[in-house]
Image (cartoon, rainbow, N blue to C red; front, side, top):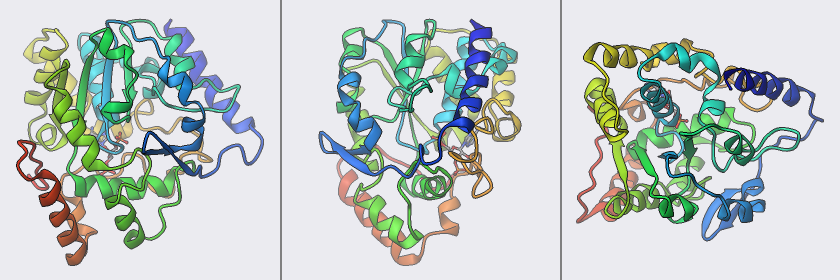
Length: 313
Ligand code: A3P
């Protein structure tokens, strides 16, 4: 199977480079049940509704830029019992397929990769709770939700939308901030996303983890994920997982830093995928009035809820 993974990854880069010019472009957003998604995802939405989950599937769920890749690496390391060398078998997107990922043939879509992935599958999705295929809940699958404060998420998404040539053009930072707060970006409103999944954990097997907590004390948070996944790793192995999933290690690791994706899709000269990996970088980008706008919206949407985010640690 490992060999299959490697072949798939090699083919992937080669095929992308040979696709006709114009295959990839900044896709417009289309509404799916009120949530803006990139057109190719919306066009294939029927396939998504018919996805068949397996009982041992693990969903790794985030709003974009919350640290998905970080959590994918943590989960894969834990599921490999801390034998982190095994995570080097293939890039993140092969080891942990992206449920709603679209791809023009002959590239495999997320669903194609999923169908050929051995159990237990570690499935990435950015879907808001209400759009996740029902089969995952019928099969009582586990989900790890990784959440990041809205200000750092907005900054990270802005840089990502510049370098990801398939996302809508972010425009200037000022324009982007307005769009982001209104939820007019791919996968919709940050507020709806984090609240929807927070409420869902009352009824489903969901572990809700915060990026800021993970930065503050990785070992403590990785241990929570480990326990949730029913694993029992020694302190020494946990230390190894912490080291392997640190920002520095992941930035240098070609299997996690997305350097295997050609620049016609991810232009890392514009902004690296592993950009800063910090809590509080928003301070370097927000104007005073933008900060006020975010604080007011946060107050309005979070009032009376027991869901709390930290924007500094
Ligand atoms: P920044 O742009 O703020 O640096 P996603 O995987 O959901 O696309 O999220 C990407 C964000 O997570 C980027 O944030 C990236 O640097 C950060 N990230 C990735 N791996 C990380 C790690 N090991 N530690 C801290 N942050 C990490």
